[in-house]
Image (cartoon, rainbow, N blue to C red; front, side, top):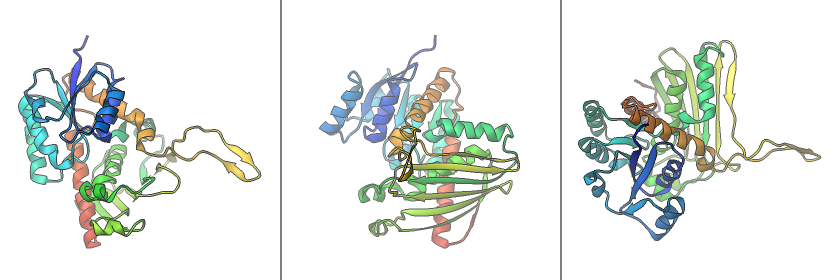
Length: 336
């Protein structure tokens, strides 16, 4: 029987609590401590409602002096990812790191160099790879059911604009929001991108421009084989969390639609009515968060440093985000 994996969660905000919730049902894993220097009574109360036994601390550094921790989950701001990863490598701890991996290229290169020397597991939090719809679409592509891929379309629209404080520290739409879609395009097609062209603007709220960002964007990726991928993001919709994909191939087409609370349709004199999509990612992707942590724990138990969403995948997504930002600013395609 494999040894139980004990985990420290760094960051007790929304995504840290999502991972704590997932660990309640992940076989072979236990959340030992959740750490955040900015703990509030409300955060503590929410954590206790999820896990009554987990330790709660404000001392991040203390995690790296403990002998009862096997791995860390990094849910802190992107600017802290590199330093926390460095500390984990030195201590011999496996790492699960939320996206984006790092926006500082030199630090990211050092992270990869230390990872390659460590032989530890390192997984990046692109949870959408672990969604059942994405997994099935990947299977249909890999088994040739749709033939040779020609065009891929990914639509991602949030239900509501986040706060300006959040947008200001997020790194921008390409790094915070569309980075999931960059990874998904690579995951589905199994190829690398050779050209990026981005266009975008402020179409939801003029205040977004005041913090140096955009709220709507379209990006066209040209892959090495010539396959075209079209990605669109918008920070606000009136009808819920809009997550759809479609791939056209030489034999046919496969697509995924929005998930809804139920699939019952009401037909009456007003028309045909169905429920709106799930409101946000917490409902839509709840199962995928559990699945990605199961994959991480399995890799640790099997002593396999090659996780299902590796540090190299994290690096590629960051490179695409940089290319999209450069293309948007120059209004020109960027060759990779």
